[in-house]
Image (cartoon, rainbow, N blue to C red; front, side, top):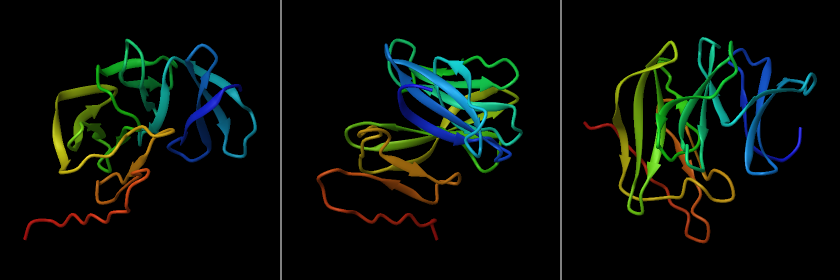
Length: 174
């Protein structure tokens, strides 16, 4: 395996790692390895793997730069990056806790909006819906991804380089 590591994600059974690397020529490659680091093999070219579907049959991926930017999936059976939501600029989409949808953020200069996209058996269902809108912005990209979030959106951690630390508490409506 060569290049800079862009992302590492666990398989749904926790026995394997998917390691995405940016290689020479700005080409992304996903490698698969046993959890102990053995048996490293090239898995697929063309995207960055972020999360495994609960059923273990798919990886959620992105192509974060270039003409074909968007959210992709990798069916483990055929090892191909297939577009799910073309044109969406994001990193680190994640399957939601329900396993029937996935979440992803989109940032503007004024806010960050997390969307929920219904999904089943490798297919998106309907249109994305707003799951959470934060009334402030943070960068999704800062020397790599600059945030993380829980599968139920109850916790969001982000970096604001060179600025003060913030604590923002979301509470359900009473």
